[in-house]
Image (tube, rainbow, N blue to C red; front, side, top):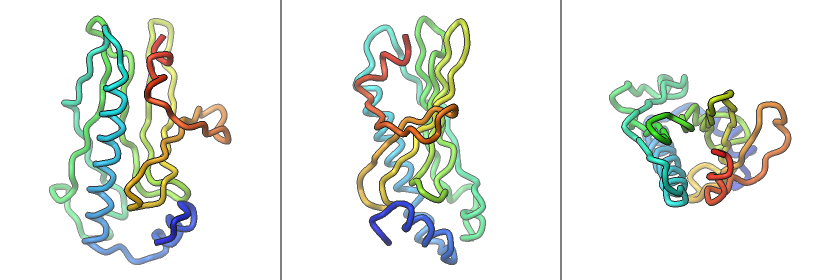
Amino acid sequence: MSADVVTATMEEALAEPEREATLRRLHDWRHRVHALYDNVQTHLDSPYVCDRSGKQRSLEGRIQQAGLTEDDVPEIDILRIERNGHVVAQFTPRMLWMIGANGRVDLLVTSQRAGRLFILFDRSAPLSNQSDWRLVRPTDMMAQPPFHPEQFNEMLE
């Protein structure tokens, strides 16, 4: 697979889905998302509390084309961040297969006034053993600055 994420994801989209390759990608996806959450949790200050009890399983078409069942698909945590018993942010894995990215996680940050939606795209090449998370605002999809978990507290204020 190519080291360039756009080329690699296009090649993958054109190839016939294989069961074992699809499972490898799903397990890699879970590992990368959980590593993202671990990094966010490491940098959160008090009074925030994290809850990873919610789970999500991808049901994308590629999984079905590869002949996988829902039980074959690894669960991925949903990360909820609470302050004083109220959810102030939630990371939800949305999709793995897309052209130009190695997965998407939606980030909803809520306050008493409103909610703000962000999208995190991993710009690393598939199965490259690394992540390159980019923070995207739906109002400005072209700007994709790196996501820095150590600065996440500022998004919650």
